[in-house]
Length: 469
Ligand SMILES: Cc1ncc(COP(=O)(O)O)c(C=O)c1O
Image (cartoon, rainbow, N blue to C red; front, side):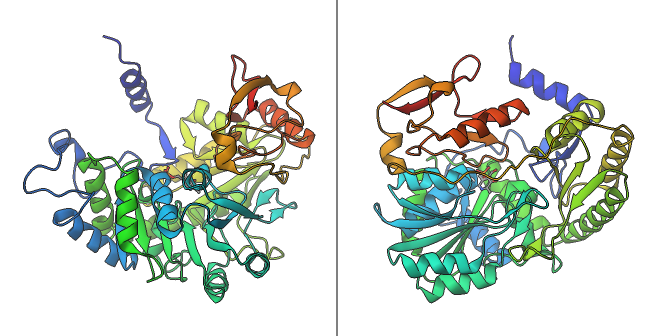
C-alpha cells in the first residue's frame, strides 16, 4: 500500500513540532474533540440538514450567528477559502468589463478574481519602507488621487492587514472610498481575530468596509480552506452574492469545514476570548525578549512611516544579523522543528494564534537565542522593492492567449502569459499581460539565488517562463 501523503503527515506528527504558521488551530482541539467526530460528520445535504448553495435551515442559522459575532449584516461561509471568497465577492460587486483599483501586492486570488470576471485593473502601491526593508501600508491620499483621476473605478480592494501584520489607516480609506461612492472590498484573510480583542487593530467592517473576506482558518481555530465573507453595508447586493457563491463553491460543501467555522466562532464566545488575550500577552512578551537578543531585530513599528496605522502583535516579524530570513526559518525548522509562516530575504515571520501556548513561545525564544549565538555573514544589503509593472494587455486576454515556453534568459522584452509568484507570500511579481523587463528578470534570478520558491517558472530546473506566442 502506497500512501505518500499519509506517510508524510504521520512523520510530521511524530516530530512534536511547534506551529507558528497557519492553520490557526495549531493541531489542537477547542470545543469538541475532532477525533470523536471524524469521519461520521462528513455527510452531504441529506434530509434534515441544509444546503450552502441555498441555506434555509441550520447553515442559515449558523451563518447568522457568525454575522452577529463578527459585526456583519450578513455572513456567507466559503469552503473554498478566502480565495473562493474573493472570487465570489468580486463578482458580486462588479460586472464584467468594470474597473477595479487594487494594491499591487494583492494576493493571487484578487488577480484571479479579476481575470475570471474580466475586470480591468488599476494599481496603487504600498509603501516600501527602505529603512526596515518591508512593505508597509497604502496611503488614503493615494487612493483618493486615483479615484479623483479615474471615475470609472468601481471597487477598491485593500489587503488588511498585509502579510506582515501591518495595517493601513482603513477608517480613512473607507471614508475616501465612500466619498466617491465606490465599494470597499477588504481582503482581511489574516484578520479574523481582530473582532475579539480591543487591543488588536480595528476590524475592517467596523472601520466601514462594505465587504470583508476572512480566512478564519488562518488566525482562528477552524480548518484549512474554511473562510467567511462578511457584508457590512447595504452597498452589497446579498442576493447577487449568494448567486455568485453557487458559481464558485462546490455543490457538495463540506460539513466538517462548515462545522469547523461554527466551532471557531462559538469558541470565541467563551474560552477563546481568554486564550486570545493570553496568547497576545505571550506574543508581546516574546517580542520584547527577542529584541533583547544580540543581533536580533523585531519589526513592530516605524513612527516615521505614516502608512502604518497599526500592527498586529500576533505576527512576530524578526530578523537576525548576517543571515537571510529564509535560512533562519530553515534552521528553526530543521534543528528545532519550529515551523514559521514565511520568510523573505531579511525577515522570518512567526504567526501566533490563540492556540499557541506558553511552551510554544518558550521554545521559539530559546531556539532563536541559541541560533543567535553564532555569527553569520551571508547577507548583503539588497533592495527588495518590487519593480512596477509594464502592463501590455489586460490580464484576462493574456491568460487565455496562445502561450509558448521560453528560456528565462531569453525572455527579456517578451510579454508574460502566466503569473510569476514568489512563495510565500504568494504575491505576483509578474502577471499575465506584463512585460518581462530586465529589472524583473534580474529580480527573479536574485530570488532563486536566495532559495525562494517561485511558482510560475517551468521546466526541469525552473529555467523557463510562459510568454505570449
Ligand atoms: C492576503 C491573502 N489573501 C488571500 C489569501 C487566500 O486565502 P485562503 O488560503 O483562505 O484561500 C491569502 C493566503 O495566503 C492571503 O495571504
